[in-house]
Image (cartoon, rainbow, N blue to C red):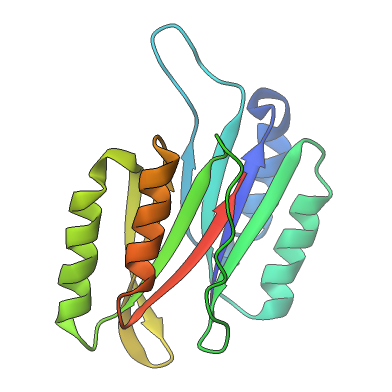
Length: 175
């Protein structure tokens, strides 16, 4: 199983220290970490997001989730990839931050090319992209995490197109 944890920190200045302390205490189960917040020359947002790619047994990752859940001022979301649960699409609240997890089985190179073509077609709604090599039930796979922003209809169409591709497993979280 592959587990991705999303964290929304409502006040990063206030909560960053405690969050970092918990993450450091569970570093052995965090394979990859991506953090971001809005930043312009006029604005430095207090709200922040983190995406964690986790490895390890359920007890260890569960303890991390539990410890993070004890921190005030953060919200947690997760997505898991296994071969038993299908993707269940749900509509996102308008304006919500939308994170897609795409697991691509590398058995068929056609899937990789088809996914890349979809990303190119819907590039105007992909703000952040992180790609990782993964092993999915003993076979090579690619894990891609997207932060989507912009036109809600285009985001929905991207999800629909990705769902149609054989060898692609899709998950979603929203904040």
